[in-house]
Length: 218
Image (tube, rainbow, N blue to C red; front, side):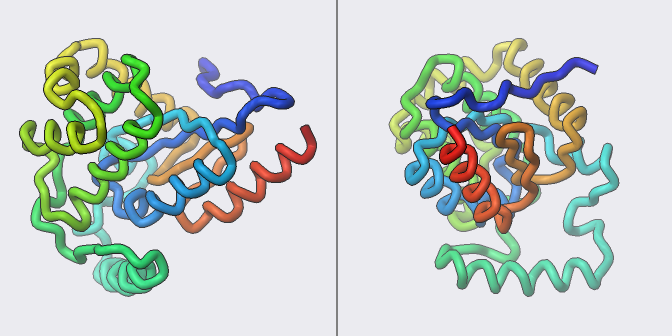
């Protein structure tokens, strides 16, 4: 297999986290603001890796929420209520436009990254797209919605939408999905730091501890 992982953070360099996620991921949204606070607090470089979450589920034994056993569906709602309170965020149990196909938005993000968009604008777009699904009742399959989200984040939404049709970006999203599977990613959010995997937004504390330990040792 080809090793797509990044080398460990060099001594004295900014910590670097690879972030596998999808704009339709509930738990990526719930952890979005705390992750961005961690990014700012520890001066982290984020390598965004949007992936096809449905494909990851299919390959690793996971199921979309509506296909899970009733007991699992019921407990998911309990956890959503808990984390809504803990994170103090708006969160809809049954968002109007879920499930949705996030591929166009993913490719717009990849186009922004290719264009060396400012990190702050990129972070804002990722959070806005996640919040659009889970709190704002917006349809991220709608191109106009995506353009508005990008524009409001400080990006050129029209240019990114046009760029998203590039076949190379379609291929890149599939490459990232294959890479995720190769690295044993089975859900979202999934963070990698110095080849250590962290699954779930409730592992952010552990991720930060690893970053602190690595920084101290360097």
